[in-house]
Amino acid sequence: MKRLEGRRAIITGAGSGIGRASALRFAAEGASVLAVGRTEATIAETAALVREAGGVAGHFIADATKEEEVAAAVAVCVERLGGLEIFFANAGNTDRTVPLFDQTVEAWETQFRDNVVSAFLAVKHAGRHMVAQGHGSIVLNSSTGSLRANGGTLAYGAAKAGVNSLTMGAAAAFAGTGVRVNAVLPGLTETGLTRATFDYARAKGSEAKLGALTLMKRPGRVEEIAAVAAFLASDDAAYVDGQLIAADGGISSTHPYGRFVL
Ligand SMILES: NC(=O)c1ccc[n+]([C@@H]2O[C@H](COP(=O)([O-])OP(=O)(O)OC[C@H]3O[C@@H](n4cnc5c(N)ncnc54)[C@H](O)[C@@H]3O)[C@@H](O)[C@H]2O)c1
Image (cartoon, rainbow, N blue to C red; front, side, top):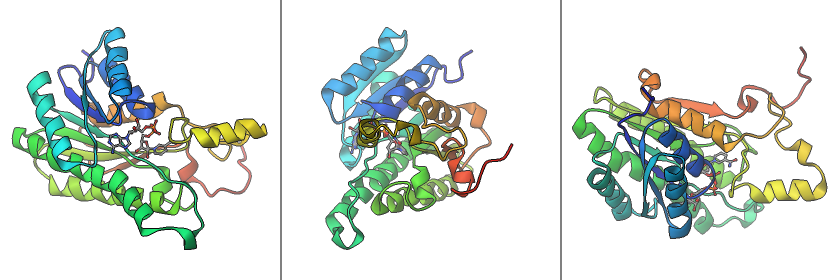
């Protein structure tokens, strides 16, 4: 029996990176997946890749920051796939690094909309459905950049810290309902979001420095983040609720100095 057999899962931002890897992983574990995103071509491609790999998937075009579109995604999942047990609120965005005194309210609002409001809408609309049916698992994609400075821009870190608070608050709000809410906190992983960093390092010949401060001495891979999201979505995490689980090669467990002595 596969871990997610018989489950129906929505994954937002599933057209690339961690979202696409999660669609493939969730489907390989038996879930039927509704891949959700803003761009028809990439979202349809994710669903096609899942089907090519022998899984079940459909796609739906929606902006994760628009309430009526998130509500529609939930309705479409229930209608087309027959239910909804898992929602991976993966969609998110980072911004450019700008000196603090030049940062704008608009840029901060965008970060909070893309990262926190999108997670809130997932909790609200998937939560409403799941609480009514008495079970479900919601996974939010945060970041180790939420825990300390310099893991991303100021606004991104603050927004992802908001996602952490939402994780704990929503889990508490759903206490006793059978609905769990947890977050995965990825460390630096090569995706569309971080491509510029990787391209810059490669161009400079300093690729070896990427992820060098992690205990694994390397950046993460999308499949490694998807694996944690799949665990949190599954009944293997039946007693895990309101938790922030870092998948970051251990970097958030250490101070970034000193020698690692065997
Ligand atoms: N890559 C990393 O190093 C890293 C580290 C920590 C956290 N994360 C988080 O992982 C998540 C996935 O990002 P990724 O790294 O796979 O990057 P990515 O750019 O490859 O994927 C993000 C996807 O989300 C989509 N998206 C963005 N805003 C959306 C919206 N409003 N509605 C629908 N879709 C939207 C994008 O089109 C894209 O397909 C994000 O929440 C990001 O903050 C990534």
